[in-house]
Image (cartoon, rainbow, N blue to C red; front, side, top):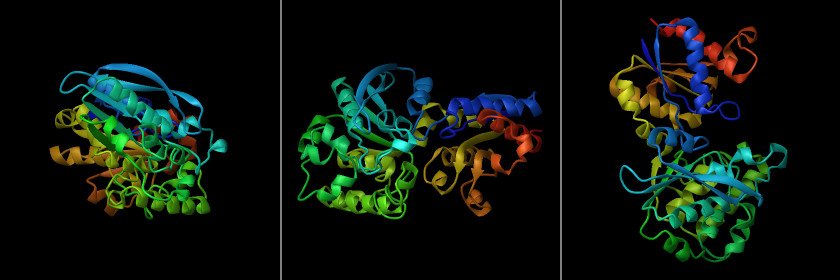
Length: 367
């Protein structure tokens, strides 16, 4: 058999590349004769640049920006000149990612996306014709206010200090300078989810808990984001992807960005449909396979590719929280979780656990 191994990261434990290698290693224990093609992917969140650099080439440019709580952090741009228009690829998690702040030190109300705006400004200064922003995995929930402040939106001081202070905004925010900064540049928001800015599946109520916000904090952020939307453009707040990255998607849409699923962009960059058409099975995965997974993330994208070429798709995950009916509707044939394995069979680290699961699944799917 020919197996395409195309996972996302296993957040907090394995990068997409490490996950692909672990899945392949485990599969080979059971089916050493199978041909395995490793195609690690990203949904726009952490690992976005790594995946695209492997698929597209180009050159990495290092840049220092403002981190989510004000300290300077090291980030990168991926600059690709060929094919097509000169393009800068940005991974917002490098400037505002969860991994940048120790869980005990997180400040859900004060974390800012200002450094993401600095990255976008650096990309514009590089003279590119197109900027693609991978949106996901952030520690901030400021509706992209910091991003816009870094590009020239005013009042700057009211926008750069996180989501909480947005509740004190009065009047309209002026985005003129921010928009002028990107005049003539095509802007693309490659989001990890298609969630709106507000509501139960929005930036604060839907994702704030992941960033350390308790219930009261999430409600406070929701109120602040409503005020922020009113001060900018409430009609944009309801668009799919506006809630991605703690609302960074909203800021990009305010700047005129076109939204695309981050996973789809990565799939196209590595030419997954071409690889899938030559395969017998697609093997994908992520740390937690839950409701968010079906809102534009990697596993859903891989399943669509599998459906398109008539190939089965199997998901390996740390845990599976999606029912059989939802699996079927998404075009996924089966899903398996590490937590469902006997503890004695799991191994001693995340890579070993994933490899052990892959070895078990291969007994069913390899032939």
